[in-house]
Image (cartoon, rainbow, N blue to C red; front, side, top):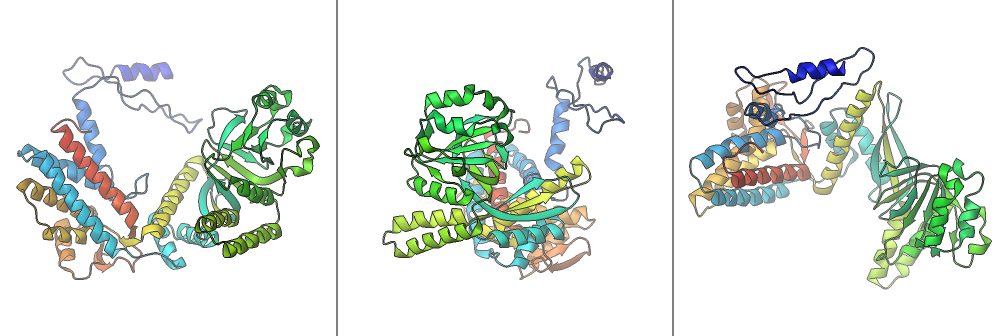
Length: 499
């Protein structure tokens, strides 16, 4: 099959040309497996490739969310590319054009910041999640998760085998501590995930082999081992690597940050969280298995560690939190109070896990991607607020550019260029629905209410916020930054090929 497909691909030729073209992707469907065979990309550069690259800028015709959760990005970049090339081709100075675009961008950002509405209630968060995820259940689950974890918590998305989307809340501690040594059967994973591991917390450098020797007993391979310590002596590290038990064990050593002053207090909190004890230099020679803690799951990367599911008991954790709150009230130093507040936030934090399932792997991937996009949109909305969606906020912001005073004609043309790009999302949505885009844009600009938008399904002008059509300000600013950077690339590359 492979030889046949390669032979067919190698014989593809352009009319009146002797140059062979190998397609970027050649799919051979098989009835016994769902995956496609992917062949190599283009082997040569040919003028026909420009005809293939150009539609990539316009692949998002209806301003849907792209893979990063950004609306309108593709169509705005396309408008910037087409109009920008026309302007540069007419002889406008590229530096003046860029200067005008960036001046307009500053004015737009200030205007949008003044118009943003903060998101606080359950209904508002659910509205943002539904608008980004496209499903009301996703929005409600994300709102429930954000309400459950509170200000100091965080949310993650994971995949499961069932067909439903579920929410799981549990205590967790997240620290910016990375691994310095790991012994893992599968070395291709950069992020280590331990299920139900033992946790050893050591206050000093591990210099005694007996500690490791007692832990790595006959049953060591049954449970992973997470070691949190200031460091490991080379001799002890060598015994870890060369130990026969390590061949079947999963071991990870995590070191606190050197410049973190309150790390000794944090490991005491970790001991209470995991239900273990802190091993000191004096207790090396009398190590007992009861000093080990445990947790439901530990996720460790090169710069971050998260421990989920405490084993220390809720009563002990609550008691420790009350001690920290009392210490905060009695503290007279602002710096010490800040460190204690950070410890309290880390110890009392919760994690919400959105478990996404589906009937097939493809369905699970699509659902998980949709939940990721909705979660990112909600986080952005909580941080900086929301704006009317459907391109309405960008359209009305374009009117603010009429007030700018430019010193040169090139800067004025740059402002007009960005003004045209800001109108494209509404124009494209209306045109894709079968309406006259220029008429819709003109009528919306005539409205005094900046929240009025166009509903292409019903063909009516409605209040975008009341209808649940909203966009997070943070993502809108990211889109504008990307579009202006794209205009800079056009100006720097002159009249070259499409980047």
